Length: 279
Ligand SMILES: Nc1ncnc2c1ncn2[C@@H]1O[C@H](COP(=O)(O)OP(=O)(O)OP(=O)(O)O)[C@@H](O)[C@H]1O
Image (cartoon, rainbow, N blue to C red; front, side, top):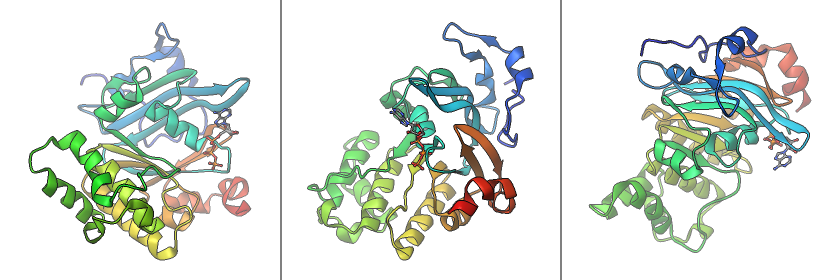
């Protein structure tokens, strides 16, 4: 790729870059183009949003956000209630349409793609609400995901491998509704991972879990990240964030407030004032 866009994950996006905006043309949908070259082959950036904005009526939930994730990076998204964290993930998965701005993924502008097409491109998601089928066994739940990418050859083996990966092979015949919350959480993450994403989005994966269950989820996420899956993880538990994150983005009032290492974020007085100190 010849053109390298100047926006990278290392940019701190505490304010918007008006120079960048003025230099890029707007397309018919009012989006900047073409920072596609900022993601995909020849770059380290897997996902890049550019001026991403979401309004609900007159309320701006995501306000001109430039946000990026590198290949294989584990980026945590933190911020006060109502900061826009879930909305940002829903814009990336396509559950919400952007009001304006762009989302580039692996060299492609995905803002107009349907959610399923984004899954096929490699963007997986585990939502805040449980999404396993309670009455189906762990095995049957896992089969739903594995079938989608694997086809019918050696299906049984692939399903069991998927269950082993999340330490649930022993519970294969247990209905998901009878698994513990921690096991259900791991099953959901394992099912999302079985779709072979390059980027996995997790919205509060350890909410309501015990300390031991949190550790198990942290280990699983770290292992999947070690296999090369990039992550965006929304989480309020700052100790969990410290355990897993490469980089942290703080959202506040729908804008990127800070980006940096967990150490920098924890030491930041302004972040403590708006978020951490308030816990
Ligand atoms: N569908 C919607 N319609 C109207 N307003 C919405 C909608 N979804 C979110 N909002 C508003 O947008 C803002 C951001 O919400 P969002 O759920 O993204 O925040 P959050 O940072 O994930 O918060 P929390 O930590 O509490 O989950 C909130 O003020 C919320 O009320």
